[in-house]
Image 1 (cartoon, rainbow, N blue to C red):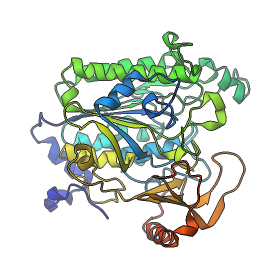
Image 2: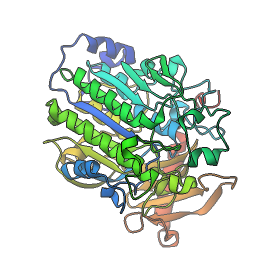
Image 3: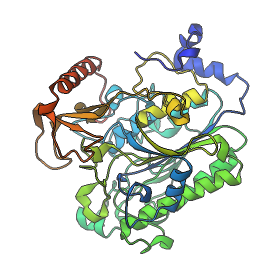
Amino acid sequence: MRILNTQMLAITGLLSLGITGVRNIHAAEKLNPSKPNFIIILADDMGYGDVGIFGHPTIKTPNLDRMASEGQKWTNFYVAAPVCTPSRAGLLTGRLPVRTGMCSEKRRVLFPDSKGGLPENEMTIASALKTTGYATACIGKWHLGHLPQYAPNAHGFDYYFGIPYSNDMDATSLKPNRLESILNPRPEYFIVPLMRNSEIIERPADQTTITKRYTLEAIKFIKQNKQMPFFLYLAHSMPHVPLFRSREFENKSLRGVYGDVIEELDWSVGEILKSLKENGLDENTLVVFTSDNGPWLVFQDQGGSAGLLSGGKGGTWEGGMREPTIMHWTGKLKPGVVMDIATTMDLLPTFASLAHVILPNDRIYDGYDISPVLFGTGKDPREVVYYYRDTQVYAIRKGDYKAHFITQPEYGSEIATIQDPPLLFNLNIDPSEKHNVADQFPKVIAEMEKILEKHRAGIMTVENQLEK
């Protein structure tokens, strides 16, 4: 078991209290005004190649481009899984979804009829930061369980405003066939609820204004909490299909409706950054922009692009799990391109370190504190990335090399193929995974196989939440 914030873990009496004990003790502490704010802006199904600064030729993203030029563009940043529910679970808990029961071979994500969700005993970024007085809000898509015991308010968020699952769910009889409803969507085809905390305030949600309303709610939260440290998790519903954008962004992009949607998301990022500056918070706020998984390629021009990467949403080729990621913190980060390897699971331990949060030692964390990389003070602590498809490891990356033990198309009926020997790619030389070099590096493959064997031995069986 790997424990974080080791310089503080000598306080063994405190640690023995577990999550509840830590929260109660910290609640009595005097608020530290120097604590940084944290904002995660998460796109849904945005591809590695969908942002101007990451190479898209016809989608204009001036705010994201400026965010990258003023901050850091991370080129080797991964998610915990290639589909929504397990990816979000990994981001918020700092743990692989297989450890929390938030992945399944049968139902890859949660649905409106699901009975499970993120277990109540799991700690999230929000619940961890609340132990030291942070205000917390989740705005946007949740997709970690719609029942009260799994909702954002039950997982450390003071405030919730958004849609509890994917925007293509709760389809009605008004909806034509699935493809037609995606190509020519209308809000009334999908009776997804828009919620404020536990109350449904609109059903069906008017998705043509959803990006704008999420943004306004986020700005409102920033203004209301500018006198105290806060954590804002802004998880957009777009560009997950069906695609909707506000009237002001219709037919604006050369890339069509998908480009319109991305350009509205870029506007949203600009509004958030502007709000931070106007409220004097930009020098005390770390903003992270990324996506939950790669583009949904089966929807063709209604889906995005992974750029030079192979594959997309649902699969373990690079395009499914390597995401366009930008980090911004005025005056704190050295601007530039960061090629170190990191994942969304690293955000929890990094935020905890920066906020001086003591994490409980009763669980295994799969994330690392990457603040030394952020500030240029030390080496990247991450050596290995595990590419999980549902409950199984399909591939592993260590350093330059990635080994595929199993391959399978992202969607469809085609079964998985066990690769013996594994496929091997040098991702620094061949990020598109076109040239298998397994026969040249048998020692690398042998090392990867040992890593996989050791990792599998450390995975314990837990209750599956997606199959309830």
